[in-house]
Image (cartoon, rainbow, N blue to C red; front, side):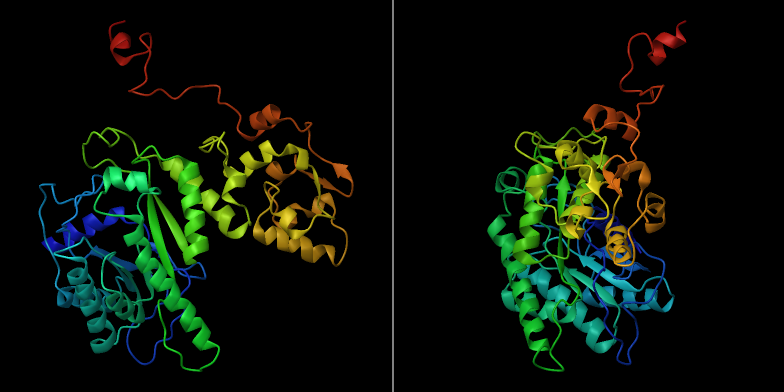
Length: 419
């Protein structure tokens, strides 16, 4: 129980554990990668799937400045055996606590030794226990390619955490890591997935290899890297390695250091949220990173979502006629999502769309009305002007939330208590 407490606590900083994209069939064993349960992750169809999320070990030979498990930290070090992890998974599954496993790890002894232990866990679960539930494991950079291959044949998803978007940031906070070492297993996984796809077209029973794809994680706020650097890195990873997801994790200060934010710094959660929104635009709205941020605007305006920010900078492209715009252009309108754009295209084949139909098609009118024309008529109450639109979209409150850390002399707690 003590190991479980320590290692699950250590695993909480790893957010790259969504299970989207897997539909593996149970062939007579136990477990189901698509069944519903209490969970902290999501299946391909939007259902929750519960995972046991833990580290194999927190005994790390690396000394990454941002990491709670860095070798120089004086913390309790524990490790699971492969047998212990497998027993926990099976027992928790039988009690209906979980549906799958997310297994990450610090680098114990060496990359190969850690990867071998992960594979041993997978073999026990898959071959001896016949566990068909979802399993996500880490590909350890620096491990032998043969070990990565073996893990890929047993796991549903694999991930290599990039953590920082630039080589300079890695040198600053994680000098034992390098982009080359991080990218090698990602390239191998992509190649394996591509080969299996090709074989699936030729053979009925082609072997599986990381069927739910690969993902990665980047930390937000541990370095001075801009949102633009992070988003460009994410776009490059999607294009180069066909990643399923890039996850963003607001940095939680756990260590003090000259190159780190102060230990009292709050995690940049809103910035993390804006990056997730921008990532969504890259993957589903066909935006390019250089459209969302430029060298003149390196970070997102936290008051507005990235799509609205793009619209503010491109007002000359609006208003857009709903009955004429193609699908790609519809996706650029604030308040119009993927589903509502599809509905618009479908509905137009039957009859022209009227303004009163738009809300029924799922369009968020309080945002879209200022950027569209319907049947040749503009329904916005204001002319298209950036500052006016900003006031409408995000009106400033008539009050100000006081902060214990940002009080003026006149309003400070101390001054009030003395009155």
